[in-house]
Image (cartoon, rainbow, N blue to C red; front, side, top):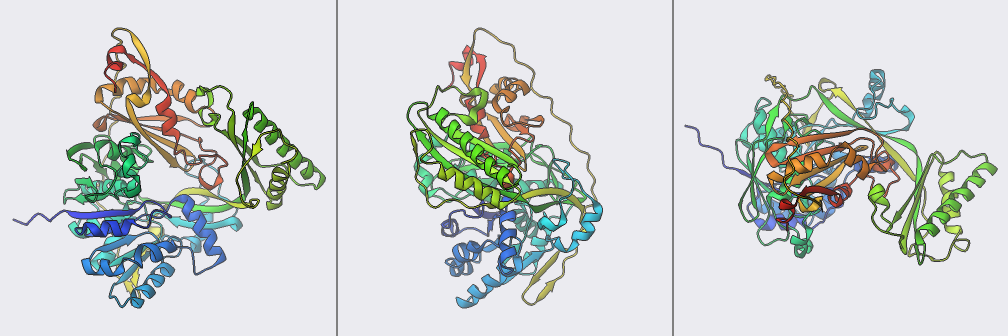
Length: 600
């Protein structure tokens, strides 16, 4: 009988470009890891890196991966034999790899760096234009080709596994799905094929838990006070993944934060859309019946994920120049602070438009005023009276950078013509920023040529397609409307649930997890379309979708066209919907008094 492979231990050291630099050293100090993985790329990041590469062809990657994460820790990485997988290559993986090789040689180490490329499709622009794709989400038409900054397919995990099979110590990729850096290590370790769908789904979920760093160990956690003393030394997540795709989520001993069924559940629902159709290049995941078991302190066993046959195409993210934007913060305090801020903003817009008319410039493409401190984010659910202290966030979009400069000059030049109470701490006047908007579409996998190579040349990699075709799952029946027994009372949702929110383009995603399974029916029927429209109507321009996850007694909510365009296109204070879960948790719902009396 073949021996069952030992579980692989993988640490997640980065959740975004700019994450804390101490993560690598903290995870290495654990001393038991096989891999450390890094996720640097989001849609916004790709837009930024495309702009950087446009100015300097030698750039376009996450430079602090080389200088901050790798350089101080390379000797220990080599000593322990920990293997590194990172998508820090951004839009220029070869340049990232070369910079790292220079650093490795400088330290006299022998570490092999292998790149995975092929995600960059700019060379195929003319062919893509002929396909005339529409945007996956908005159905918008293909943008002007002269304004396109980057086109990148979201690659999967099998090329990463091939790099590891070839002996890579460090794998650097361009755009791949966030979880692929973890799944690639699992495929290499356990020899999973494209038909090992359950295992691929399990490894992908492990990668999803790791991909946002400390969000799985107490960061952004609803019950933040329970982990508040650990923020300064928050532990980065570790996944112990078994050959069958089940895994334990944990963190280094002695670090801050916590790993509980709550922290893991929040991260599982984070930005997944339809939980039964989480599409990845290698597998379609179904999280609806996942089970979370608290084994011991800071150890949660995750099982029950299902996998279905992989999509036939890759998702592609295109960034394009879509005008300019600019903004500024002005604080007002004193009586009627909100009204004063609104009058001031109206004056700024009016003065700017007068100049536009004088110089034959077009009007603003969009304007935005949000009064932070006056519950502007709460819309119809606002509960406070007039605020005596607000920060007026005024922002605009314009087709011409000169239009932004007019706005910024008039806004800062109205200081002596404003209502009383204007104040603020700020540096120099802002500058126009280019808007790099996003356009997403699908492309057939056979149109994407993937290359795995090191400094000595190309490594053999032949994509393998799965043969198992699986039917999509049935929808679980949502909980029935509970019967009211005895008197009813209103309580804030946070008493009954946890929540985590984020974005996918212009769609907000809110995961809500019942603190106890018996609360979920009340939550499900309270957060119906009417209530969600009341909470988010001032943001919402599209439809609402709700999904039920019986395994974790949770629900996932999608608010379409709710982020003002999302990412780099939005003028909102929260363009990625990170606080939408907090708005939901503040909403009051009706439950029996017998339940309310048992709440903490």
